[in-house]
Length: 349
Image (cartoon, rainbow, N blue to C red):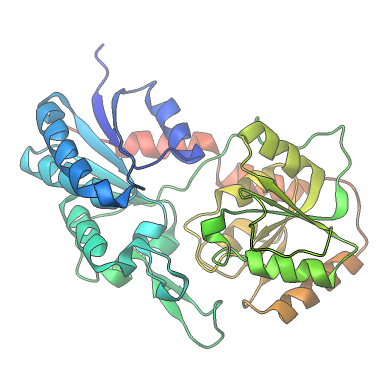
């Protein structure tokens, strides 16, 4: 039996994108459309190349699946509409947000916002990874000042149907190491240099000064050259592959997700599966992911965070994994659940 043919458009290959590609390839004949969209000066050239590539291949496709809204989603959505091919756009976060104060969000850039809007208008269905990407607001960044985001907030007249499909995680890969004892005063965060303020890197650095007895690890970036660190309790781990990242999750007892905006929080879920106790911001879906298995920071306030950490480390600690955190992710965000929901959503005639 012939596999349905899918044009899969993605600007990048994060672990969650690769994971989708792996399981979708078992059910569909995938053709990958991807360019180095980080080279913004080449975006017009890429768009022309993409237009003709999609135009040539679209009649052979049963449907189009796009990761992230952006310049790359424009022509696939337009041509899908013209040639009556279903177009599904998976929304991950930055494509639903505008936070100019932090230079974050595709929708803060007028031209890019227009490309996203037209793509969302023409799509058959939008597939956000959390309800918070539809419409949400919080005052975590500045108490009393609510920042609203979500595609329904930015495009209130958008009529395209949507269906929330959470990210999913493999508990057989992301699991505790029973042969290791977790350190009770070691903290880990995963963030890139571009996300340093967005995900609370500056808060973590200040915490390190206030808690010299604790160890703080940051994966995803190297120590910036402009940092003048006198403390030895902060370790920059650089970019880690999945195996090495898992090993770090397995060693530490606490995981930080202190984002001002978070489309989902994949690293948070991975850490929880490895038995880390989560400490997260009261933002988007983070409190829902954590539930009663960890701690929530109400506002982006270093003194409030210090108070929370002092409370945590003064509690009787054990070297055992946080099994409740692991069980929560298995129950709510399994990879099998994402497979089932995504496969059932990708319909075509």
